[in-house]
Amino acid sequence: MSKTAIVEIDGKRYEFPVVEGSENEEAIDINKLRDLTGVITLDPGYKNSGSCTSKITFLDGELGILRYRGYSIEDLADKADFLEVSFLLIFGELPTAVQLKQFEDDIRKHTLVNEEMKNIIDGFPRTAHPMGVLAALTSALTAFNPKSVNVDNEKEMYHAVCKTMGKFLVIATWTYRKSMGYPLNYYDNTKGYVENFMKLMFEIPTGPYKASPIVIDALNKLFILHADHEQNCSTSTVRMVGSSHAGLFASISAGVSALWGPLHGGANQAVLEMLEEIHNNGGDTDKYMAKAKDKNDPFRLMGFGHRVYKNFDPRAKIIKKAADEVLETLGVDDPILAIAKKLEALALEDEYFKSRSLYPNVDFYSGIIYRALGIPTDMFTVMFAIGRLPGWIAQWKEMRENKEPIGRPRQIYTGSPLRDFKTVDKR
Image 1: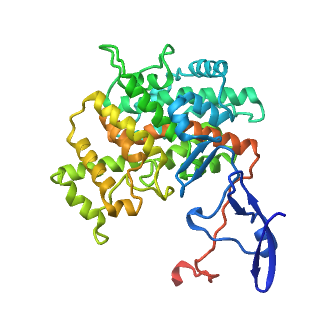
Image 2: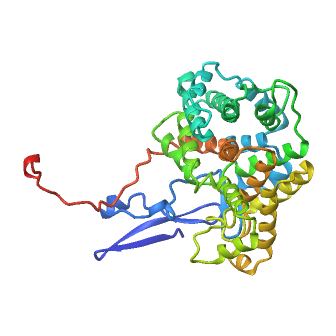
Image 3: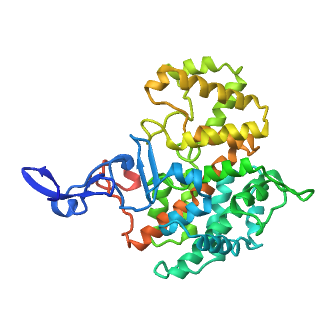
């Protein structure tokens, strides 16, 4: 027997169906609430509201579970590469060997960016934040690809996916090259996707660049861990913008802007800024741990705990090992990273943090890895965007294929009631 929920308003009772997901999650379907009762729900931040049904990502914050299309994040990070996971998220199943090779080859066909895009990036000062540049360049791709995608045409949709995956990686690295004053690099079709990221970022004309396999593996894992995370701020933004039937590039550009915020994708940048603050003030980690435990102190320990994961962040367990391997492989001697390792050790042993499940999260370890690779702090969120791209595409594709209505939240008006207008001479 199906469940129902009863709402009583002014003595009248209304029944609403309860929807159950494949992992036994339950939601009250209030789709007809306003039509039947004349009232709406009020839920600032949408913390209790489901905006859609989705087959892409399952997340259980209480148990520390993250799965893509039913596959555990642990298995995917350990056994798959980023393009395999991208294919899984976007098309619903893991690719066969033939499908994966074809996907890689088809992405390579779209990695060349129109030379006129350089005119746009040249218009930015070198000091411009890379995320602002990336949002603008992503949006500008619409001008060079004006034909809208027919989401009901499988071939067109596949073509659009490959084009987006190919070009986004290139323009994302261009934001770094611009800030450094380096010439812009091009994709090398003889190399893999993640290896190309390192080449695009760091190869200079005076000599070839070869990244360590340990580094490539760590970045592969990081991109996989960031690939999707259910209906977060940027993903919801992509779906909301796409619900107006805005194109894929425009919708992803909006997602980039949403990700830019320090409460979302900027969290790993905030970690490094905190570490630099501690270093600049003497590097006393015990002092800052005490400040973090003092509820009257405004200092916040960034990179510990998570809004969604109430126990532990499953992604952090995976990437901690990769971070340790990267630091050991590169032999980095950096006082900032030394402070990070001290904070990690203290927090993992401190009863205050353990009792509150304030463990290092994925942003803490990703920041450490990016710092060790010599990636500037203001590029950290761009790294997040590269990883999150397949998730955004998958969510946009699902929303359009499900023919979801245009997003249009309601509000409760709290302004002035009707007032008489007075001409300017009488005010």
